[in-house]
Length: 135
Ligand code: 5GP
Ligand code: ZN
Image (cartoon, rainbow, N blue to C red):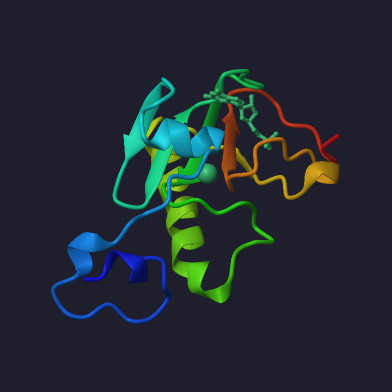
């Protein structure tokens, strides 16, 4: 196809899909997904990556992230419902696999709620008593 049209949002003619350019997002967790930054990865599938938090707040502290960049829960749409459900089920299966009968699944949304990395993620925390309300 005409390279000048590559950036257009029009439908791609059949056969041109090899020309799709996926923009590289300069985001910490996207870089972990692309293996540009090392992480202790414990699970990977088509849609999700799970790795150990670098500053664990509990004996088990995993980050469950979508491979596709999504800035926050607020940035999600109804089109992401299946993805969000998948991330929760992945967390649940990992907890089951580690015989964790109690765990906390937390998502901080927005700076005021403690979100410091702008790539949607669940924290899977377990292995110590959890207080409520959270700080
Ligand atoms: P948030 O504060 O956005 O809810 O959570 C971000 C989490 O990412 C924090 O718990 C923080 O410790 C973790 N984190 C920040 N940088 C890195 C990193 O380079 N590698 C890993 N594995 N975790 C990170
Ligand atoms: Zn990202």
